[in-house]
Image 1 (tube, one colour):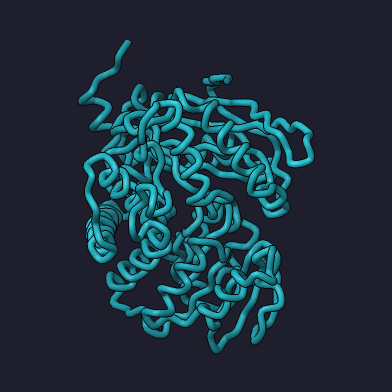
Image 2 (tube, helix red, strand yellow):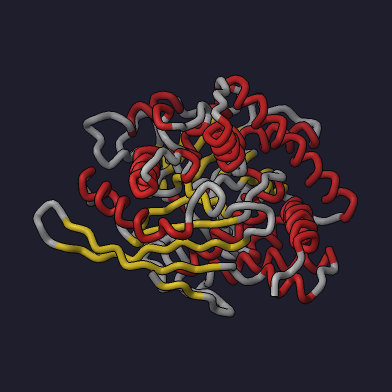
Length: 438
C-alpha cells in the first residue's frame, strides 16, 4: 500500500470517449471551491488546508481469474477531510478510475456531507477495472483483496465506504464480511449500502434518485411552478437515473428522453419508464442496455442533452456539460444527479443564460444522507421503516435546500456557489474549533 500526498493530485488519462482527457477533474473541482472561498473571504491558511486531501492510498490488487491466471489491478482510497467526522464516500469499479478522479470525488463528498449537515468528512475509493467482464467469483476475490488492502484505513470511526459506479450492495457485503472476519466479530458499520439482511437500511437503494426528485420539487416550488407536466430528459439510466425517472414520472413529470452508455432514446409523448426499467433488467438483456427498447427514436448522448425539455438531469459521469454544448442546452433547470457533470466554463454560461443549476453536492446528496441513517442504525441497533427513512430524508434535504436558496438570494450568487459557501463554512467552523495539531 502506498500513501501519496502531493500538492496537486493527478491521475492517468481517461479511456472513456465521453471524458476530456486533458482536463484534471480535481483541478476543475477546485475552481468551484475557489469562487465560494472568495465570496467567504476565506483565510489563506485555512484554504491551503482545504485544497489538499488528508490521505491518498494507492494499492496493487493481485487476484486469481477463473482460468487460473493472476491479474493485478490498481486500487485507490482517498480520504479528503476528517474535520467533521469519519470520511464517507463510495467505491467505484470502472476502467477510467484514476487517482485524479477519485481525489475529485472525495473532495466533492466533503462538501456534499457538509451542505446537508452530516457528521462526516469526504472520502472515495475505486479500482481501475471493468466489472462487466469479471465473473461473480472474480468480483468477490477482487473485492475481498481490495478490502484487505485498505482495511487499516477504514472503519465505522475512520472511513465508511458505500456503493458507487460499478459496485453493488453485494460488493459492500463482501467488504463488510472481510473486515468482520479480520476483526473476529460483526462490523456492519464499516460500509453502507449493504443488503437489508446484513445491516442495510430500507430506502437506501432509491435514496439518491429520491433526493434528485426532492431537489427538483424544491426548486420548482421556489420558482412558483409545479412538477406536473414538466418535460424531463435524463442522461444515464443506472440507479440514479432510473429511480429519478420513475419517481419524477410518478409525481406527474413527463420523461421525454433517457440514455445509457450505448444509446439515447426520445419520445416527446413520454417514455414508459417502468417498461424501460423492466427491459434493462430482463435476463435476455445481459448488457442491461436500452438498445432496442420499443416506441422511441434513437439518438446519441450528445443529441439527448440538447433535446427540448424543461428539466435536464445529467446522471452519468463527469464533464458532460461543457462550453461546447452549453449554449445548445434548452432546459431551464439542470439537476446534477451525477458528480461533476458540468465544467466551470459551462456553469458560467448557464448562469449568464439564467438557467437554474442545482449542483451535484446538493442534488444527489440523498444517497449519503440515507447512508448516514444506515450507519446510525448499525451502530445503535435501530430499525427504521421505509416511510420513516423517506420522511427523515425529505426533512434533511428540504431544510438544507432552503438554506442554500436563501444564501444564493442574499449574496446574489448561483446555487452552486451558495452550496459551496454553506458547506465550506461548516467545515471551517469544525476545523477551527478543533484546531490544527502540529
